[in-house]
Image 1 (cartoon, one colour):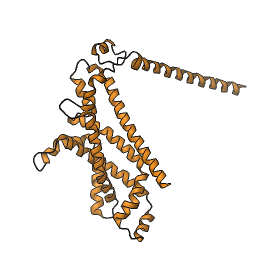
Image 2: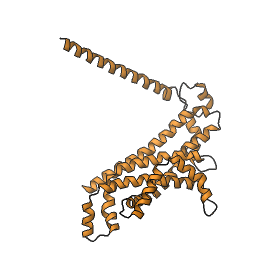
Image 3: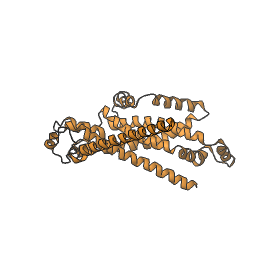
Image 4: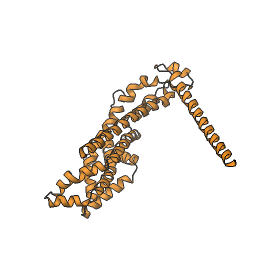
Length: 287
């Protein structure tokens, strides 16, 4: 009897905890609904937003500053196009460099493996902010022709080097997963080293590490926001610049940052869906 009573008490306590948790979640959901939708201001009216006294959201800051947020400052290229350009350029350029580094690090020739290992470990051991500062302020001092490329190109170079080091390690992990018997079989069929890598080893290695490559691409897209520390006004930098000099809309940073976060979330979701599509495509081709 005591065992049954104790079991019933535990069950009742568990139900009570679950009910309390559901009630708390419902209360939080209601408060968010009121703050973000029911009592919010959606028109770009600064006076109406200030009258809310921060008790509800002011989404009017988004249409008011949409050009600055998505296209950068007037007369200066930036915003979302700069974010996408930096990501696309650094991602595309880091592929040949990263694959070459991965192959060089696995080489039996020390004059290839040692420099590749040194580069990879050095770049991975330095914060991306440090690379950006070096590209922005140190590279012009060492540039042999006197006038260094623009700040955007130097930031793209730093992102490319940073991405290639991590990409090389991801690809190297995939290369190690390919059985050595396949390269030996290719050699017996008369394929050279490069033909073996191009037709047999690399396709299998990339299929193996595709989820990791997708995650790296998403991380690189978000890392582009760090270029604001060297004075480039990409999506996040455009937000800070547009609101920093406007006292009427400056109090509504939170809503503007939520909008920028939603833009990043949509871009990352698109990359994630693209990765899943490639996985399914390769699975169908393999099957």
